[in-house]
Length: 469
Ligand code: HEM
Ligand SMILES: *[C@@H]1O[C@H](CO)[C@@H](O)[C@H](O)[C@H]1NC(C)=O
Ligand SMILES: *[C@@H]1O[C@H](CO)[C@@H](O)[C@H](O)[C@H]1NC(C)=O
Image (tube, rainbow, N blue to C red; front, side):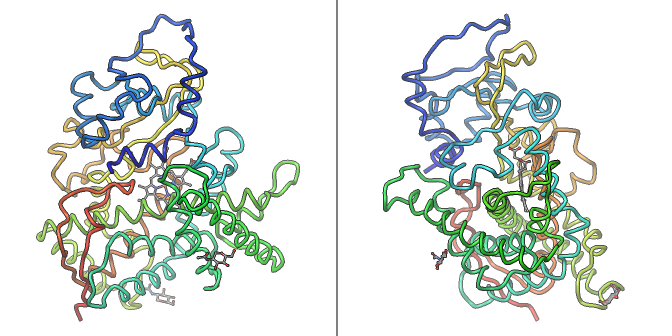
């Protein structure tokens, strides 16, 4: 299956598709004189989905952009969409006119994650929750987690060094999950961590499947796992309340929250936001880490240089404790640029969705109320006007900062990723220990891209890890 089979089952509104188009089809008169953007809508209902199923999505978008320019319309699974491939348009939708657009996810996915998770919301509720999440993942808080993240990185690496071929993506997912748990709960006992891990792994299988609620389907199993997760989270919450532990982690902030009337958050709201963060944190970080290993394997000279940077840190004056400090993680310029370039080249969040809340006019074009808009991050990241020779992996291009709104691996505006500092920190910590103590060789072919739904190297990048000393 291609990315679109998967993404659009998950990221769009399939369930309401036919009813919407069959029964609610009514022509609205637009007050404005503006025209719709250029582009072809394909067949009614199916739109251009078929073409997207059968074409590399990058080729699909890029050929459209070439033909119609930076703004074009299309229809995906029945939904009329306007795709936006310029920095100015991304800025318009995500920042300067963000109030005219709202987030949009399929109902089936909202149900699995939890309807109160912040990314489904706008306005006051979103702002309150976002503040809590942002505080919990701010550098001031996450820097204190470095020793624990290091411990998780070291034990992950040790478990990979067993002579077996490792699926790098799966291995990175485990690491990212553990870091997620750590940043949400602080220390959580192993019993709870295991229950969450097992049930979450059932839940996540439902994210990208057809939302059929019949017993036996992945979606149904996923919904059941979500119910069990609520019970587990409820138990943890009640224990923390009893122990009156006020802690510097997401759960602590959620528990301490009071609105202007003094009300606390419900257990459900807390659970939805915890599952939401796990969802946002795991596959994204894991796929970027997997790409980093792939890009470094493909460029032996760069690998030597990055290893050199990391080994020098061990030997420097800082290194006497043999443990990383915040200052050391701020002093890895080449490794940091490898991360930035990997985020650009892989563009694991290739685009996002919003929905026009009213009729919107942009550059003389009409975006009718209810239409989806998609800022195309990947196209912008691969536009030679902003990134010379975009197919080339070149971390040194980040010696100069990119122009505004040409580089948005973490989005932009009021829904931009609040976990971006934590994501970069955990990647640096893992890379430090990997590059100073291990070598790896790729096993099998890894030249194709697999969509999971995030792009990852074929077969999750099979590799064998060996300790060097
Ligand atoms: C390299 C890894 C990551 C990437 C590439 C990434 C990317 C993104 C992007 C592009 C968005 C904006 C989506 C949109 O505007 O529609 C986003 C939102 C979000 N991310 Fe991340 N993310 C990563 C890691 C994390 C981590 C580690 C966490 C949490 C610890 C996290 C938590 C969130 C949350 C809660 C939102 C929703 C924010 C809101 O709606 O206000 N992300 N992420
Ligand atoms: C899921 O959670 C429940 C508790 O609600 C637990 O009994 C069960 O063992 C967990 N794991 C799996 C795989 O279901
Ligand atoms: C080494 O560790 C000790 C105790 O944890 C700490 O006080 C000291 O600042 C550390 N030294 C360096 C150079 O980071």
